[in-house]
Picture 1: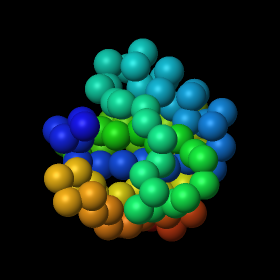
Picture 2 (picture 1 turned 120 degrees about the horizontal axis):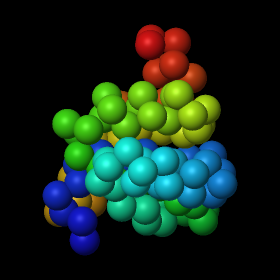
Picture 3 (picture 1 turned 30 degrees about the horizontal axis):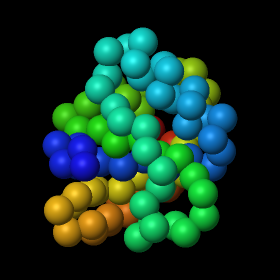
Picture 4 (picture 1 turned 180 degrees about the vertical axis):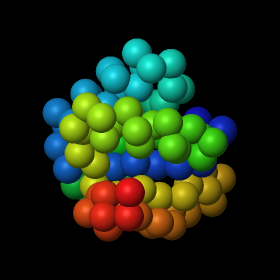
Length: 95
């Protein structure tokens, strides 16, 4: 499902995930909101899927609107493999 999306962004709260989906939709950034895969976390949670070429624009929108996320992953949907490439605190320090 949603094989074309190769990035996954998880959130610390459902509230931030919903807000992110709304803002990104308004900014014409294609995302899909889905539950966090069990391969990442077995708790209930929400994440968004998107394409890597939209990462810069997506992160700028979230930063400008103070939407906090938890972890960023590279996503291989066919093999259900997720490689964590950033955590919010580390990412913010770099930008």
